[in-house]
Length: 217
Image 1 (cartoon, rainbow, N blue to C red):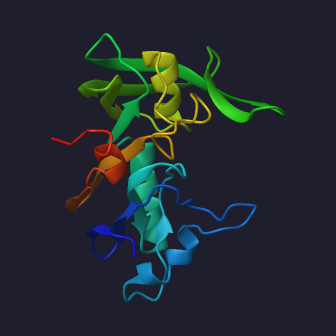
Image 2 (image 1 turned 90 degrees about the vertical axis):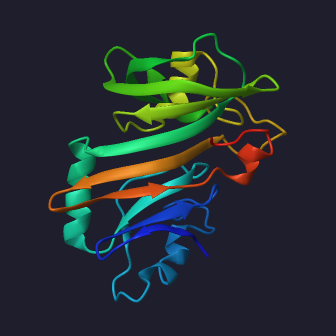
Image 3 (image 1 turned 120 degrees about the vertical axis):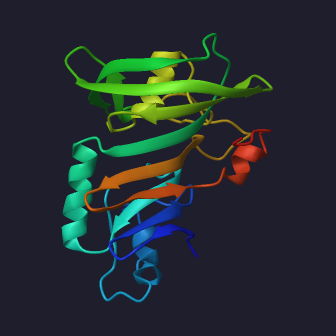
């Protein structure tokens, strides 16, 4: 079962588990599609994801319960009426305690490493605000609040903006025996709506963060 963090007639926010892809992988395997029947919750129509989270990323994922809501929520993301709070564990320590990262990002691809994002002058602008929350055993828990929603934005911002990748990130850092994924968690989501209260959801800190000695306090 997938935990429901918010529910009303037009929206669900689910607590997506780490390791669960939104779309079925080309090589097969489980995906969010396998849970859509249970996520109908009495509705005839299955809900639809409004945005994306990487397979490794856990936490708040917004689903629309009808096509009109999907369109409205998609526009809210485009118009930056969405507040997003992420928690990430960096594979090292950093000197500063808070700041903003502003980088232009571009996608590149190679036969050896596949595709990834890089900081490039001709890329699309991206902005992430961040602050340090705690340091444990040489690792740093950081709160990220992205203004834009570029692919892999926080992951490449950690490496190119802060100089330290996320712990366990196989693309922008390296795998780590202490964890089984890139340590990024979508901890909070707030979506403004016209004529209705905002959608607001909070996802608790996952167990693999707590095993590293961190808490979300």
